[in-house]
Image (tube, rainbow, N blue to C red; front, side, top):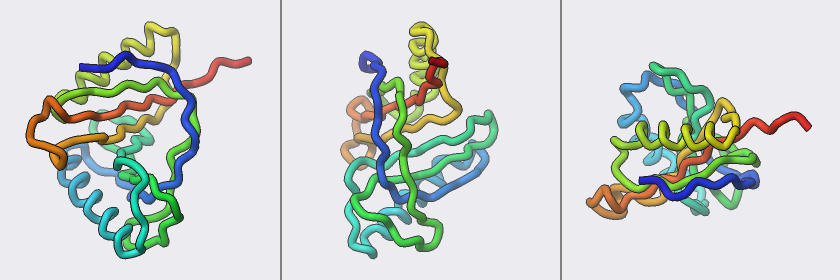
Length: 157
């Protein structure tokens, strides 16, 4: 289930990120180990996350994911291992929240993209998902929340 989508303006967010380019089939393993590495690095540097972790997909390809696993932070992270400073960009985005298990993300994105098209808007090449609540917050997938952010190409003025 999706909340009513809306168009909004985001501000740039300082982040700690790990950049990955992997086969789509490896996403679950990469996400788990990546978020663990991010959180361990932040703790070692005394930096607390300022929001939920996210994945920022930079290029969409059916077989390959080119993306960053990230978490917003209040202070720049010092590069350590795969963790480097990053940023979620300021952008005009279409945004909604998906309620449900991660297995339903693909179909939910299709529904969301149809809404964007119906608004006459053009999606940019990137997108990001913020994992507001998931398996770490409870075992009932119906209670999980994933925020979808689809940057939009702005029409020529």
